[in-house]
Image (cartoon, rainbow, N blue to C red; front, side, top):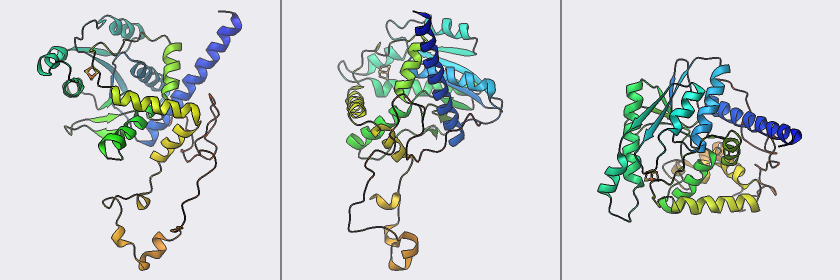
Length: 311
Ligand code: SF4
């Protein structure tokens, strides 16, 4: 690579790093993800997302005004061909505290699920249980997962298309067994940034198709739909993500979320100001339109102001 190409690659990497760091810092601040004294267990699968999550959290840890510790955890599920040496070599290299948990969930799943059926729901249930147990053993106060903005949007569409719910992945939640707080610090990060960052940093990616499951089919279709939209309608993804942060319960149809019976003339002051007879005018351009590969704010965005890490 020529000197100028190298300089350009370094410039782009710095820019990406800054953008991801800012997104993670903002999500941590907005959703109260990390507190003084937390021990964060970062679940590391060996995919681009979890490598990026660990990398950015370690970086933020150095300059955060509070103290928190990080332990990376990988679950070796004994899938055929899993390169067990890759993660320990990487983690030793960066000097982070880590634990590799080995449990042969692959054999359990193969034994219990008939050939040809998808194995993901049992596999992920087993994995979840092992990770919760590990978090407890390690004394971790939070479990960090590498899901990002595009996973959240995909999940919303999957739930709308198949589940009949307006429901996505929360940035912070209590685990189903009630014992752990799970956080998604990449909630504001774009998958394409993570992808470029992981490539530029040359993370030793472990392929995610070792189990041979086909379960991702519906998700893959939604992903392709969104990627197609992203190409044809710039700003649409950003705008949809803004919409997920800007819900108007009185203008949905969920009677559990909004008390429509309470809308009377007497309540006019509270609910007035709508044009009931007309369809609402929408902006000519998506409000989340971003200059491609740019660090600028959405033009008319409602996304909160960008914060430098404000832990
Ligand atoms: S894709 Fe494979 S490893 Fe992942 S949840 Fe499904 S069965 Fe488990």
